[in-house]
Every structure is written in C-alpha cells, then in structure tokens.
Length: 262
Ligand code: MLT
Image (cartoon, rainbow, N blue to C red; front, side, top):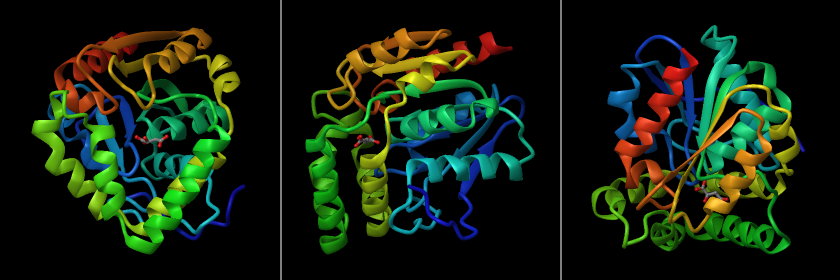
C-alpha cells in the first residue's frame, strides 16, 4: 500500500565529492548511525546520509506508508541533488528500503550495499510483534522499546556495546513514536525481494556481522547467492550493527568495493 505523500523531504547530511553513495540507517535509529564511517568514506566518495521518515530530522509519513514510499523519498532526494544513479546501501531497515529500490527503481542503482539485512518478508509472528511494538510505542513513547532493543542491537559481549551504547540509546529515544509505529507497520507489510535482487544487474556488496542474531549470516548468504554480481563479506566479532562493532573492517570492505567500481 502507498499513501499520498505531502512534500515530505528527507533530512540529510552529505560529505565529500565524487561517486554518490547513499547509506540508509537501521530501525529505530537515524543517520548518526554512520558517524564512525564518515571520516574515511567521505575521502573516497560523495557520502549522502538521509534520515528515514520519523527519525532524526525527517517528519513521519502518515500511518499506512510503505517501505516503497520510503524508497520513493530516496529517489526524490537523488532528483533534488541532481543524481541520476548512485551506490545505495542500507543496514537492516535501510536494507529493506534498498531492496524496495531494487524492486521499483533499479535504473537508479549503480551498485548496492546490503548490510545486516534480509530479502525475505516477515513471518506472521514477526508481523504481530511489529503491530504490538507500534501500539506500545504510541502509548508509552520510545523508552521501553529502546531498553528492550539495546541488547539486540549491541550485545554486551561485542565491542560496540561499550563504545556506542550511549549514542544508540540517544538515537532510539529521539525517534518520534509516530515514526517508529509507521516504520514498524511499513516493515511488516514489505514483500519478499529475493526475486528482484536476483534480477539486479549491478555490483553488490553483502555485509554481515558473524554474530548478527537478528539478520544472521544465513540471510546474507541467501541474498549473495541469488544476486548475479554479489560478493559476501562476513565480519568477525560483530553483531547486528556491524558498522559499530567493527568500524574499521566495515569501512575497509565498503572502501574496497567502491574502489572496484572506479
Ligand atoms: C533494524 O535494525 O533496522 C531492525 O532490526 C529491522 C527489523 O526489525 O527487521
């Protein structure tokens, strides 16, 4: 389902020059997720970091919005920036938006980066859980969700926890309840993207933390196997937010991939 969009534009920051590279953040975070990658990547490309609707500086879309609507806003941002084709990447929910771009706007993709995400749709049980999340966040605000998600996003046994837990908590607590609810419901409605990925005729980097329990390496393998021009990089000692657990290894994999694209 799509909704009629007002003139919602994606808040974003950009750094550097060269090949445009859009990175889309995870749920329920915002573009600050990519802070550790900015210094290195902005020396190699034109790094464009949007906030998805309802997170950071971008207002929520109305309830009923879809992941496809989020993808449409990314295309709107590319148009405003005068960008015909970009490398587009996303982590987890950002990957779902990237998959929607692969389904609907493959001609705008120069290459894709799919990090700690999956192509499949949600099980009925997960859909129910997302509806419960939406309802509870609208009732109680983001606090309880933030508390519940911290261990999943940054498990205490992995290196990102000690370094980034304040930042991750701050992002979750800053997200609007309406934005979290709309994103939960949009994720629950997203269709399977594996077929679209298998038709994607551009280079792809699939990244996954070896200890990612939310979107495990088997999901990454499934995408990388289906995509004709994909390479899979597994990052040791990293969980779901692999770019925070291992910023150097994550940045190195992305930089190598970008260099190969020329
Ligand atoms: C995310 O990190 O974006 C979420 O875990 C995605 C999801 O809930 O499927």
